Image 1 (cartoon, rainbow, N blue to C red):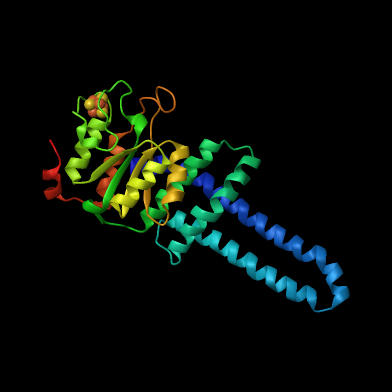
Image 2: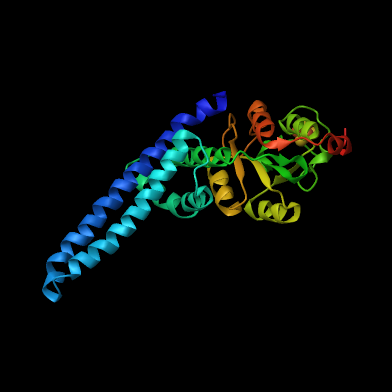
Length: 266
Ligand code: SF4
């Protein structure tokens, strides 16, 4: 198991626990929904509690089965069938519910979002993707550029002269090595515009918990590997990223294109 996977284990576990709690809640609610009105339904027709119970049981089994399958996918790391619909279930529908459940249990939002990102990465990992470099995009937040840098790299990251004062320099080196395009977005709207223009098949995104979470959900069904930035100077100011973490993701998912690398400005 890699270092990054080790780091993601506790985060992922939190979400799995919450998924388990949500499953138990669904079963409990289904029982209550059947039991309480059953008393009244029997007065209308003796068979009604049975029909109502059967409908609720099918719904509960479908939801709990989906959650169970998802938990198994996460625990085994294997691409179980229904994976794509499962990812849709988590990203689109379960996430807001799980966040609310976590908040009710007093868990910090950042922790929940970290868990969601780790879970998303794991689901992408189980797909065992290998994407050509030309269809991969490294997407970065503007705050990773040195605040005092006079060069405007939004729009064209190649303008960076690689002075080494911020991580843009090292990230450009990685982009060149793999032959991947890299872009800096100042917000969600620009990020969406970049994605529409470049039409990638895989995004390796660096950002904070909030932006990665919304980005992963916005970009769906496009696979996004989320890498959390480091914020030694506080949020949104001279942020950093662990380059080995980005390199590891590129090594795992990208088929390098040396020819394209030659085209990247030195
Ligand atoms: S590495 Fe590039 S973006 Fe960062 S401070 Fe230097 S010139 Fe500016």
